[in-house]
Structures are given as C-alpha cells and as structure tokens.
Length: 392
Image (cartoon, rainbow, N blue to C red; front, side):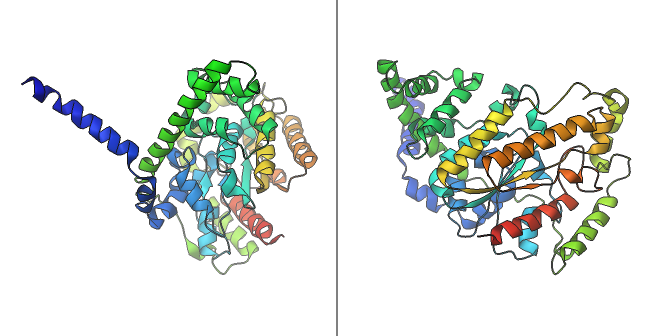
C-alpha cells in the first residue's frame, strides 16, 4: 500500500519532466498560421507579455504592428485592422496592448523583440491619460507586466547598455519587481557593472537564466491555446472598400451619429453605463489635474530610445482629449493646450516621425467616448498609416 501512495507523485514528476524537456521546435510547429492571425486581434495579454507569438507575427514580411492601450479594443469597420483587410493595403498589422498598458510595459516588449523589430515600421499611439501626476501605478503595471520580458532584459546584449540600465532602474521602482529577489538581485548586479553583489549577483544570474528558459517554455505552451477564440471585429467592408478618404470620413460620421445621442459625443452604450448614473458627481472631477508633469514622459523617452536601439521605424500618434467632456470635467482649454504643446515639443526634440491629431478635440465622432480614438479618428489614422508605409 505504501508504494501506491507514491504513484501520484511519480506521475507528477514524470509529467513535469515531459513539460520541461519537450522540444521547443515541436511545440512551435503545433501553433498554426490561423492561430497567429487570430491572435493579432485577440488582445490576450499572453500575446504581448510573451515572446513567441509576436516573433512569429514580426517575421511576416509586410507587418506594421500598432502599440497602444485600451483604444485598440474599440473595434468598428474603420479600425486599422479591419481597414487593412477591407482596403487590401500592402501591409498588415497586429495589436500590442490593452487597458492599463503604458510606455514602460511597451519598453519591455520592444527590447525583448529587438532582433525582430529591426527595420520594421511600427505605430505607437500616445494616450493623454497616461500622463497623470503619478504616472504608471502598481495597479496598472502589475497585471500587464511580463516576467519573461523582465528576466530577458537582464541578459539582453543587443540593446544599448545605458538604455538597458535605465530600464532596470525604472522597473525597480515597482513593487512587482522589487518583490522578486532573483530579478532584483540580477538588476542590482548589472547596475553596478558587476562590481557589487558579486556572489549574489552571479548566483542570481544562474537561477535567472533557468527561470527565463522556463518562462519561455511556458509561453510556448500558452501559445498553443492563444488565438482559438476569434473576436467580434465588427467589420463592414462596404464602408471602406473602394471609397476615397472623404467618403470614408462621411461613412464614419454617419456610423458615429447612429451611436451617439448626448451632448458629449460619447457612444450611447458607454454613456448610459459609465457616465449617466454619476453625471452630477463627475462635474469638475478633473479640475485639479494636468498632464505636463509626469514620470510617464521619462517612460516615453525609454520607448523612443528603445525603438532607436533596436533599429525600428516608429510613427508616433498624438491623440486629443474630448473637449466637450473635459470642459465639463473642468480640465480647461489652457491645460489641454499645455499638454498638446509639451507633447509636440517632446516629439520634435526627439526627431521622431509623428502625426498630431490634437486639433480634432472638438471634431464630432473623432473619439468614441471621453478619450478613445475611433470611428472618424480611425479613418485619419488609417490614411496616416498608408502614407507612412509608402514613405521611404
């Protein structure tokens, strides 16, 4: 009887060893092209927190990924992914991010994909609400953080050394990173240029390499199940295909008008669920906010430097706030203009290509709610992407 009690433990050990040593090449072959295509729009955090799926997407010849946050999930017929299909553009795209992703999350992703991003054109949507006084907080950082990418950073020899160290310094400000003794020790060892914490640092890097390899193996297993549930993309090719930009704008205005019935230009579904029940208490709720002093500017600089280091070709997109809503929230025109001007200055000083849509803050149906680009805004972005793809 005693021998029988060891059978479950023995089975568990055998299964773990099979999991651990099963060849990566075989796992990769089991992930179909159809899964990869579906994963481009699934918005599953396992995609952008991982490595394999994105590397597979980036190996496509004419791919132009879009980095952003919660606006990416606002699907409609004019959404860039739907647009590229309907308009039969010479490029395709996939989406990187979800609600709560900000610059520091994207920094980790960019440097992890450094070999695959070289020479690639990418789009990076900058959201004004990232630039609050406290910047990225732990609440939004933790669920979007990638352990695999954070560990990989400590071993990355393909990016600029100063950029690597700046990233580690910033990441060590988050409790999620500080609570990981192996990762923290590796970062501290690297930041000292291997002059301090020598014994602990070397030991941490040995364990860290094994941990990174296990994380990559886990990413492959997760990838086997990503992309099996297609998302409702709300596509309608007839609103895009064969139409000029002006005709698409008119179609987007008509599409938006059918979905808005309030003074703020907010989609009815969002308005009735999020805004209307507490409209009175939201009056003036942003009267003390401003978006010109935030740690997010430093994180955005990390993103810009990361793109330069890996040899990518980013197009940055500066989007507006909903003027009518922000007036109601008492975030006045002066403070909005101060943010717009500062963002333009930052982008110009960095010498990066960008499009500035902030003059559309009063443009009906450019945004779908208080701050997310959509409908007509997507049309403008679609054609900006077309122009950038054609630009040599």
